[in-house]
Image 1 (cartoon, rainbow, N blue to C red):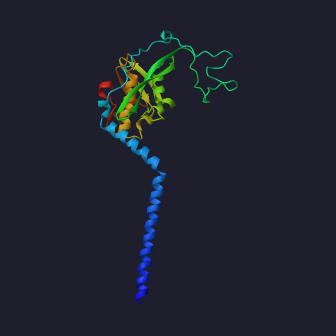
Image 2 (image 1 turned 180 degrees about the horizontal axis):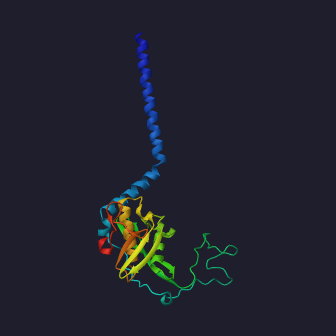
Image 3 (image 1 turned 30 degrees about the horizontal axis):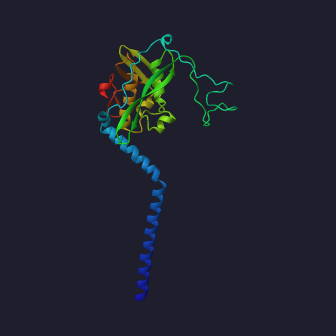
Amino acid sequence: MIKIVANKKRSGAGGWLLFWLAFFIGITVLFMLNLERIKNTLRETRVLERLAAGTEESAGETDEPLPETEERPASAEPESRPPQAEEGGLPAGGRPGDGRPENGEKPPAAVTGPTVERPVYLMKVDNTGAILWTGVKRELKVSDRPLQDALEALIKGPSAEEEKQGLISLIPKDVKILSAAVRGNTAYISFSEDFLFNTYGVEGYVGQRRQIVMTATEFGNVRDVQILIDGKRVDYLGESIWIGSPVNRNML
């Protein structure tokens, strides 16, 4: 009788040992499968924590200040010509038969007619972890709505090459610009309701407001920006980022 009880105890202990061993192996496998996702999440968290701490103010802007750009009528804009084709009718760097560059990638659509370069603002994190706000240029077709064109180029976000350099945008991707007009020295920009929802939270709202204001105030006749949602004033982005009155660079 004593031997039977002892055997049952040993059997029960062995069962628990196998259970915990299997549990540990399962957790280890799940961790390894999700390792890359965990790394990316931690990286984004560090970026947003620095935004919340205001380190962008101490880091400053690394680029030279971009020249102020006056809004001018289309007739006053400098004319830019599309790249000339090589002899034989092929685009520069192309191959017979497909008209593609040597790397096989489809070339971007050429901007025809007069063009002008406009600066838009993106952000990046350098090797030390500091957050830097960087102005990059976009070549845009001359039109009678230069401010809206520049903002729409900003909302498209970084190019593939800029993404490789670590540049990102914090503006929600589904945002649409409903109107953009300048009255006095204030730009009134109306966005769709998507502008109110940023998956990065407070830090995302801080960043998207900064990108809009810095890009719009690159125009010489714009001193501050009134952000509107569906044509109406809204006091805050999220719970605490003020947009109820015109915002200038000194308020960022």
